[in-house]
Figure 1 (cartoon, rainbow, N blue to C red):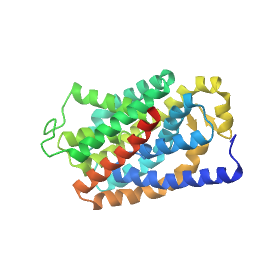
Figure 2: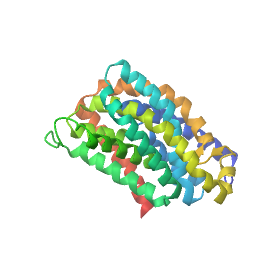
Figure 3: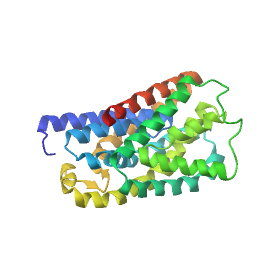
Length: 282
């Protein structure tokens, strides 16, 4: 990568491997696919590598979605083995979510870089406030809605997840807890939604990134030269192995924690990662 010597490249590679382990753990712990930690870290890595600002954020998001594919599958299987996944929600949401992912991918092709950061901060901080400050009476209702409203929720989850590079756990966790579902069930079900979001989402960012590759040919060179659209294969290959190893550990930790402890931990984490992008927006 231009501008980096051998020592810096090794340090960057080791950081990505370590981040993979952490993102896999969070995928299991919070049902978020790991994207909420991958996107901020990739942003710093690609900044050091000299990736142009105009394409840096979507490249982070596309790469994050590609990595979420195997980690979310492994996390889902571990939660499903414990019987914690609500399969009825999956049956209702799968099609609206996929449509939302497609809409998000088309938006990513034309949207300015600041939009991705603003969506990330807005959702992360909203979810953090809900988790850290919520009381038991902070609810939309006692049961999740039926019909068009529920399908609309699914579409919004798919759309915003694709613009943030996360597996949907931020939104589905938030919605399910607002309707009285236990946080453990929300986390487990979110791990399954991450599978639905990450596969078409990564393909969508490959599609969205083709015009950028033509406008910024140096991006391809900076990825040594393995970038397909808005997905950096080098970043994905360094992060995936350790994330797969640690995802089941996160699942085990989630089921060992109390409801309130899990909510506070998730809320603090979201506040911190959102704060990073507020700084870059100023």
